[in-house]
Image (cartoon, rainbow, N blue to C red; front, top):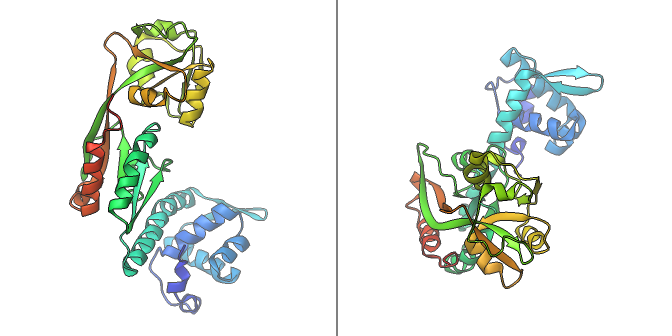
Length: 318
């Protein structure tokens, strides 16, 4: 991280020179104290003296006419205003740090990094097949994959924390474009000993006594619930959360539960695991994966190339 005080002369502040109401250093201070728990530790992490940091806090509170912290013994507790300022710091500082990193890469003649946000857990397998040819075609560009977003995938795209969002749930938002990449069917996955392995399709009632294994995603965003179980008023006997695709597949293969996954993923993994896909309902559950982008980025050459490679990928066709 490029520490902001390297660009600000603290001596001017200490001499009483007027500052604008909120400076980046204030956001740095609020975040550092929240993360490290004390003014001393925060000052050390920001490479400033404790008196200088305390002075900056007082000047901010005076300019805002608002207390940011209250003391509880030796510790500081954020006020309601301080909590809001912390939320601003957590949103803005990563963007500023990212901008500095990106500008530094440009200064060094590098293209930078294409940051891909994932709201589709099993799509990692798909992305891996695109990554290799993409990196080969763009040797001066790196790829980074981000899964956990503090404010959600859409906000991460808006906030420039990511450049592309892989999602099955597009939202119409001003300034964003969602490009359909591929269609797939969500199916129930069972092991070789499961009585449903030969069924043409499964009804919701047949999962009432099952252990359903899913990714750690809110129920309203899991299609097996929102489009299959919940409309029928059915809940599984047990709902188990597992983050890793391979572990989910291994658990299902060993008869520890059932899962709902893309058919293409199941077909690809059948050489590794004894798995059997079963249609969810007579008509099935059809899905589509989209790439979300900022509209003004759609003409960037490497962005267009990534979208083209994603749309032409054969890795999910079954």
